Image (cartoon, rainbow, N blue to C red; front, side):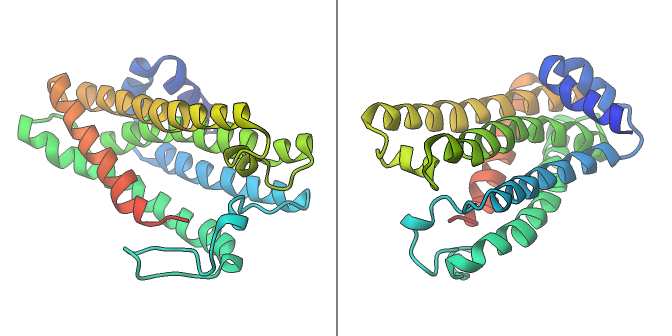
Amino acid sequence: MTRKFFHYLWGMIVRPKSTIDELAQETSIRYAVALVLFGVALTLFNLLLFVAFGFDWLGTRRELPSPTYIGFFGRLSVGTDDYVTLFNFLINPLMALVGLIFIPGLAQLLAKIWRGAGTFEQMVNTLVFATGVPSIVISSVLNDMVLAGVLPNLLTGHPYAFTAAQTGEFGASVQALWWVYMIGIYILAKDAWTIALGALAIRRIQKIPTWAAALIILFGYFLWFYGLAGTFVR
């Protein structure tokens, strides 16, 4: 199972069409569940690295008031000392599991407007990889574990190197590059990649027009990531 899992993960990066077709043939959603758990595990591993090297995982702690955590549309707030535990061991795993069915379920429902031919299981298997792989590559690996991870702190000797780059402590040029990366890659490139893969998956599985598939994934993605999941901020 492990070899096939990484076959699907890598395939979604280099050959998404054939990988989507392969995932659609799976009779269970175990690989989709495995990808969700893999993403959660990467977050916990990153936290472990920070602890092991004696750094603070909450990189924006200096800029945050306490209480800082705002969730449920402003109805929940906690102190900064509690945020790391709450996010890593409750909120992140919970949102990951809900996300397992939210976008696929919504896509399956909306595809019926155009008489979609796919099944809910096929939507779960393909859309979890379509939305999860860009997040893992850009957010979990490139951002959290490399650019905003332990490595920059070690290289610069600054305990909050990533945030320091944002606030201009390393100079205006580094600050400008930080914003180019955040807007161009972390937000726009990741969103575009996710939407493209999602539209491809919905079109191939549901057998509906490309424009309809694009509308569905746009609505589902922004409703989930910038709507419901976006209520959990720091």
